[in-house]
Image (cartoon, rainbow, N blue to C red):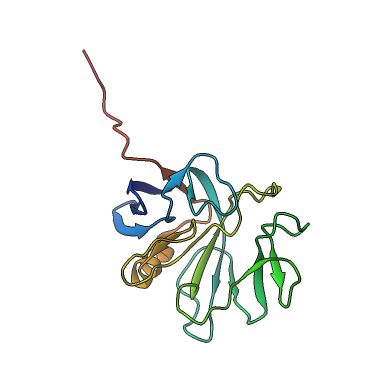
Length: 181
């Protein structure tokens, strides 16, 4: 049975991520969540997105138990966030002339990175790039638009996911009960 990850905003840059019986606090974009994502708005996009693959730092830990396609991160890995570049919202090899994000980071935030299928089929310039699920800072500081979890929560979540799982980002809790007689 396919099951989706649910991310519910608590307002601002915090939320709750649930998958079956698992439930974890998470950090969201510093501008909260938004329906119409734009490059540089610092918001997490509302919607339902496939989980494309897991990127991981093999120099820091082995690949976690996971049913997603996995790929080791190399020091030369980057991601294009330049709307004027033909490789917008695609992985790139560094050095790279266009604006980009480094995937091999000095901190631990990208030790595990789940690439979300936001604006990638095909990418539309300016509609948002580099939307990932990654490791949170210890105080759950806001992200640039990603979803971030504590490392141990991410490892547990990855062990439970199905390759068919999607992530669904909601603006607030939705009452699914019946109303009226």
